[in-house]
Image (cartoon, rainbow, N blue to C red):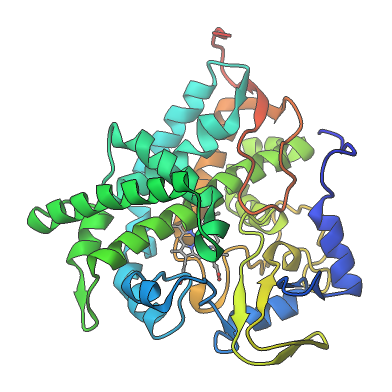
Length: 392
Ligand code: HEM
């Protein structure tokens, strides 16, 4: 495990532990969001969508109306959007993707075994979720590279997209992606295919059909919500292997521990470390007054280490049960892709523990744990479980 140097930013887990103890609700400076560290307060926020609105973006009302985002809207708009897409994320439909995910994961890990030192993000953690979402949206072949580029551009600039003006390159990526999907939507309206995008275009409930703009907005949301987070779950699992190599051995001996390992990784290194809300009225959390209209940051990753909820909260317990973590959210916006995220995480861990004898960091991580999204690069040393001449 790499040692912290003075150049590395402070591990946020230390900061959050101090906040939970001494200052559970903090506004660092005027106009900054109120950061909320304790599990109980975070749950209060996620439960109460009337006081804590998800409609946080500074886009114009007109823009929001034309292209509403499920994640950043409140009822009734949220209900309508979620209802129209949620059937595709039900366990039965997600389970039907298992073979595809397993095949892709096996292919990527076997390919990894050609090397002894490699970037885990490029080799597995990024391509696996991108392939799954691309497949759901019917993006195939050469379009995949383009799709990954748009996805990276949009995710890494989400702050500017919501709260400011993204730069020209990001706007171009957004426009290109919109144009691509608008063409696909038009094709699918004429000739349906067997994928999620086609079903999104077709589905009709008593709330009507999704408009082209609503379908586009959902495609964008899947990129933001489903790609980097799953990448981060996979790199988080490998961070655990690096810090606690005995967990890797335990999973090799007893793969039935994989589901609880993944749950504990979600709790221990929560990929979606914080979300955001805006107060609709003056309110109080842990005795601190928060005015109407303020931004609030429920620190999910901190809540998941709250000592008052989890026994030995700072210990990684491979078979922890119960495990009431909220890494996949809570309340009306709870993660729509939760089954899929778990399945992808479990399959990636199964492939790694099946094909590798060992895996550890080759150098320090470029990001600290707890940041939104995972590292962009993670160099690891691996030893395959089977004999194969190394190509490098
Ligand atoms: C380990 C991976 C993942 C984590 C940790 C994660 C976490 C979360 C969290 C915490 C939320 C709630 C945000 C809030 O309340 O503001 C959320 C919402 C959401 N997630 Fe995930 N997610 C993951 C993977 C996925 C995947 C794979 C998909 C889809 C392919 C997905 C789709 C969504 C959507 C659409 C929402 C918005 C739901 C709504 O607003 O009603 N997520 N996710």
